[in-house]
Image (tube, rainbow, N blue to C red; front, side, top):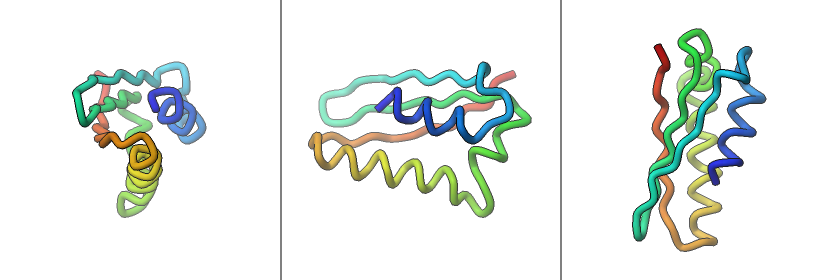
Length: 78
């Protein structure tokens, strides 16, 4: 899942080299932290949050197959 989020995020932003994805594992859920440059946060969120919502839907659908819940958190780098 980490690679999937990284691939999608790098396609959306202007600075793909500043994209960092980390994953915190739990028993039934995982938190995926997506860090992007401050100027790219708006591109990842999209109009009315559509881009980030679409990424979360993809994670949810893939998680159902693996019987695991994935939570995406967007973190702005400094």
